[in-house]
Length: 507
Image: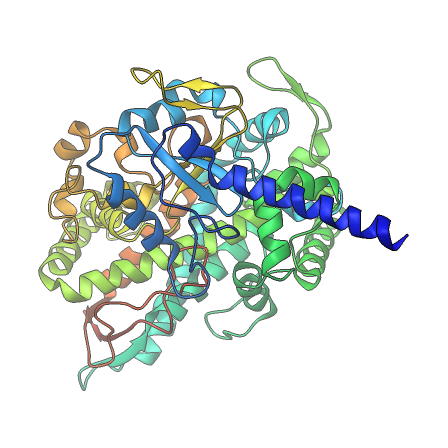
């Protein structure tokens, strides 16, 4: 028996060694350039320790940017990946040849870990069906229904800040990152769950704690988490889970209670939850394209609410924080934006309406430039469903099953695409410049059929929040403002260590 175990361990060790060697040399053996990967961490050495994911992506891109390769090799932990260098190839992946790159290849386990079965993670037929179900809930008409709820929270937002900012004596030093997160938490809470979270007044709610935990904490240690990211299909077959137990129980319980209450009392609200409950109650129904799909079960519904909350809360609050940070340093742009907001409001009887928010073109330019300079999600992921020969480059083949990485944060800081890329300049997003630019050169919401389905909602809450703030307050740097900002290497998105402080005064 001892001899058998020795042979078994030797054999397994040899297999693991062969796999690691094969994986590390995969691109080299094909003549594709790649930085030599680490045996375990691949090309992500330092991530979640001392290197920020955005920096890893930008530095890797810049190393190969001038070499002329359409893509280079990259190991995302143990997943071999094609790191897309060429904008035309990026457009093929996202749009022209989307059918071959429709999947993301992310871990999800709907049976054992239902909150992972959301639109962002799903692939194949399950993704297509879910996208068809959810797309009608994010039309401009549905945004108009939810608009009053966001306005109500934004008015409370202004009141809370007015209480902290004295009318005289030069204003006050405010930590804005936490304040923005409390605003978006309340917006998502009311629009996704129909719950008055009141996080603006009581910051440490269970809702907020669980959101933070879901973003930062992992269910497993580094090795098992790396295994899930590297081998998502095998991890699912092993019935592994990713969401921490208390986060799972909190959100599943909240959704089940909300559904039960609304169905029992026949409560109707203009929010995301109401639209999902309607899908649940429909059963099977026919889409516009003639395809028959089933309604949502409770697990599917909970997963969509969960990702709507997680995506909408963090990305929008970070965008608002970074936007104010730049405006505090560029008071000329801030003054122009404030003037533009007042002019638009005068044209709409002084009211923030759905139409007046859409008319604030300069505000949209400022937000777009913020998202370029501060790319919250640093890269997009796709997976090749079949072998793909890069047009014009017959030696460059992306084999079936290979992960594809599109380094959005790097495109956004490419001086050939955006001259003087470190400069904050909203004029880059004037109508003329946007028309002259390829859509895939700006990717904070992705592009093509698998772009962010909640983009309209995210833009709406960000525009409303910033319009209210700039209309009522002036922002400037102070002694506590970190210039430059210090980013958190443990964050999967672009997040700072500590708060973002600035001086706030009444406008």
